[in-house]
Image 1: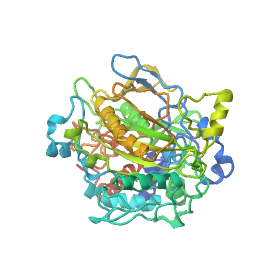
Image 2: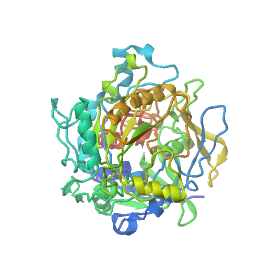
Image 3: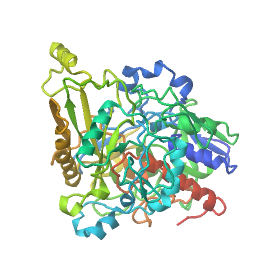
Image 4: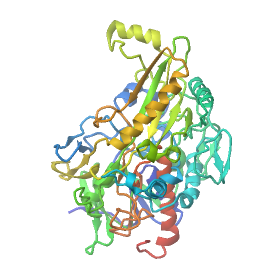
Length: 589
């Protein structure tokens, strides 16, 4: 029989960005809160101290900060005709492990979606008709609008400490910002970070081509800053160790930098590490949850934590898995379209061009994760889907962001991959390369989904989650279009060598190379319980006192990095809990 802890008002599963937001906001209501984190504890000091943190072999190559497949993994297949096999060696995506989650090791790119992306099906129908939507594409609208979300985007940007240049403030288009973004009520909390040589070179080429370059919106401090919780950030020193690392400089937006130390000071908040939640426990009528059962790795036993409210704020894949195991909705069936859990799993569609210049040096060791100049001239609200033959879009970025010597050695194709020839190539080309990246949207499809694997189980005897995913022609056509537009721009910069990397039509998903950790969908938002797993307030349709937050709410993936939308939706959810739910617990929709 499981040990039982004292009942709390709220139990939070996972202490990353969304769990930290829920914790600090609900603590202000006087609620007794406990957060359960499967991984270890970690703080800027002592865990990210210099110089230990910038150990590229440990963190960049051996992935010390990432979730180990032995802790939790998925099985993967491309279609229903294949047998799914376990993802045993991290490659395509890298979920975080420990307090702070993936918000600790991210690059810091922080975007809002375009207004059109939150009502994409309606936008397509109004402009081209629904007949252009490919068969099998689960194109949908979010049950929230951009106008409704704008105050929450603004607040998250203040908490996270975002640097940038606004392009649309209350409808006024401002030079030097992104003219294609949704309106903002305020400018960014901090001005943009400094510009490196490669991004300046890209900016000049874009202006000459008639495009509209602007600095990337960065969760990287450009100056000293204090956020609404009193947490302080210091200006970035461009060390180049962002992706896969914690920030020793208090410069990168993360739960540690923005929230956690303020949250830990709250007398009504506590957290337990090495506490792996196994399932959400439902009442006999199935309409509410009574708490969660977790495995205490320190004590080696099951523990039941009763609570009035359960907030699921672990990584998207983990959230979906836990909801499937707990019966928080009906599992999605791609053949019938029935069920909601596991529906609309989506990813990201990327590509890029690398350029080599014999007589120009780009100092690749100087940069940060969200560095660079961008254009949105090929974004969702700028593309004619009817004429182009695809639905979606992409932003482009150029800038130095990874100065790590092991992982940053771009070489022209044909260079030897080892030995004397490789050394000669490094001597000739190190520091002489720059790139332009395309970061594209990814639509949801009936046959891309998540469910429970019938064969493989974890160490607790629970079925692993199975991922059925492959690239689809619509997104590959979008990617090829970006290639056709990017290559002439790159050529205009007169490189000595130029090479492209874009997935072509017919490309098959490969789980081995890293692509992004932008896994989305699976417990999507919806206006009614037949179409999704949670309502507009991230409240599960199944049990009204269970809220599931994070990128699992995405109806389809945007063209942008997901953290800005995740953070905005988290504040939208806790606002609804504070102002509507606590005084009268019930289904809010």
